[in-house]
Image (cartoon, rainbow, N blue to C red; front, top):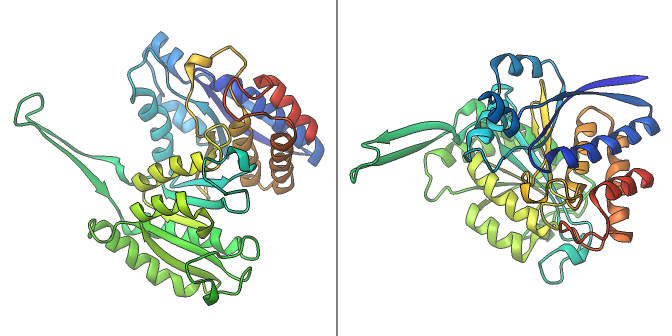
Amino acid sequence: MKSYDIAVIGGDGTGPEVTREALKVAEVAGRKFGFSLNWHPYDFGGDRFLRTGEVLPDSAVDELRKYRSIYLGAVGHPQVKPGILEKGILLRLRFELEQYINLRPVKLYRAQDCPLKDKGPEHVDFMVIRENNEGLYAGAGGNLFKGTPHEVAIQESINTRRGVDRCLAYAFEVAKKRRGGQAWKGLKPEDVEAGKRSQLTLCGKTNVLTYAFDLWWRGFQEMAPAHPTVKNEYAHVDAICMWFVKNPEWFDVIVTDNMFGDIITDLAAMIQGGLGVAAGGNINPEGTSMFEPMGGSAPKYTGLNVINPLAAINAAGMMLDFLGETAAAEAIENAVVKIINTKIQSLAAGRMGFGTTQVGDLVAAAI
């Protein structure tokens, strides 16, 4: 029987609660599809920081590098200054493990969960690929005369040809694999035979951020001819935000930089039903990847058994897909869709009609 060793960081607040449900469901999928999962827990998070003053020791990064996958619940503690845990754990692992892709599937599972008028699951089914190691998140910049009336704050967006090209190459491959699945629903559907070609949209701001997005645009145009089965489009980030709300069905795969990707994926989460179902992966295709629900640690719900674990369960499904267990991943997603459409009253915490552990049990049983 195949076996996978996976590092687990339950994190803070409700993170350990949703993580338990995700691991439970993944184990059920493993038993059904003939593989086992060996969990290796780590206690990095707010409680450890408050106890020891340590966020993430250097030795831990080297140890985590040995795993193919990391499962992360959530980080963020009400007694720890914002940014310490997020930068010290989440961003540090993304950067030091070169998880240069942030992968965000955006799917609506039930029409009533979408805040957009007259939109259903057939309208919201796309993928956002966000560059995950560069841009404004690289931490380049500084302050002059801090704390004085003459203070200057500089934050620089770092975009390298290597970083841009590897992100674009990954996005083209994802788009190519979606060919024959969701039909292209672009502005000129007569240009493309439905179902034969997928679409990749570059999201940027070429009219203002003329240095950074000139690099993105040139890389995009140079790479496109090698992928004839992928229709390539461009849209400014502000236009993307507008069309997400008005016509989300126009999108198939979107690729963008770190900052814009962070923003548009939160908007995307809302149109797919909220953070209760939104999951993502921090991907290093050749190394260690990390999977997580998109919601925060939600400390006010800690221990109440009311938080929605479906995003965490979806993240576990993404992790299994990354490990090559595609059938198990599909079974998890199908089970989530089934219980949302037959059991769950609402995706909001405390209004599901079931407790956190019960929802996990329902998904496990559906598998």
